[in-house]
Amino acid sequence: MNAGFLTANNLHKNFNGIQAVDGVSFTINRQEIFGLLGPNGAGKTTTIRMLSTVLTPDTGDVEVNGHSVQRESNQVRKLIGVCPQDLAL
Ligand SMILES: Nc1ncnc2c1ncn2[C@@H]1O[C@H](COP(=O)(O)OP(=O)(O)OP(=O)(O)O)[C@@H](O)[C@H]1O
Ligand SMILES: [Mg+2]
Image: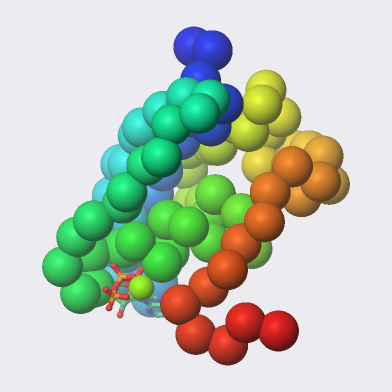
């Protein structure tokens, strides 16, 4: 695993036969502003939900500052903030 602040590694998510995310990998380094762009339904929101511990990937993992989103979700939640597209409370 490289030294990026956030590393998404081969993420997959399927919803009842719909492959919402199909092998997404990327690294975000410290002090970097990263834009995740794609057409409607491309899987952006599903990816963000997996990065932010809301949704568990079918396969793949995310590390935030060296912490696994799946195995160390509490440590990850201490490091992140999320402002969603709709409904921010
Ligand atoms: N909870 C869910 N149950 C079933 N299908 C879902 C669910 N969430 C997303 N999908 C499907 O997964 C695919 C990816 O959706 P997603 O919302 O991640 O895309 P998006 O890139 O955020 O789209 P948009 O630009 O419209 O916000 C779409 O086909 C969507 O219908
Ligand atoms: Mg979306």
